[in-house]
Image 1: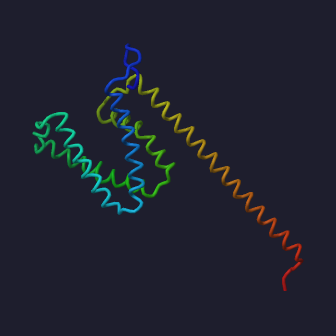
Image 2: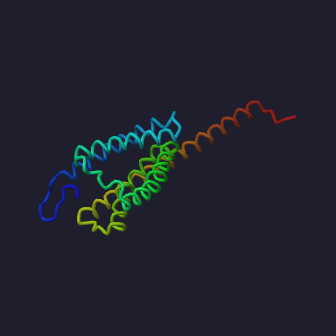
Length: 188
């Protein structure tokens, strides 16, 4: 809960700092991915990103938790869930996300990333049975409100662009008819 703990008033702790750092790194990752995907085949990019992420995660886990962190890596329970995670999140999810980054407009990518915190909240509630808490409901409402405002502005701009194109087309038609009347040529 950003800046809100039950009965304590406002505070900014390790969790909030980690969430802010994750948000900034996610934005940077999205921008770098979008630029990088322009000239690189999607499969090569996905493999490179996964290998680099695995290496960074491994060294970060060793540094934070020590060398015993991976001692149960080959147990049956862990291996089963690793395969579920690998198929659903890594293969399907990352491929779909990178494909979207490669082919979508910036506004569409922005809209998709706006739903990430809400999706995480809903998934945590459904899969883990977590209580959303008093700070997350207003935060979700703020996010939905921001998405609605952004979509309203986007639709308004599209409508204005369409009207401008129609006016330009009508002006060109009027100019063509005026030029034809000056020549007074009606065909053979």
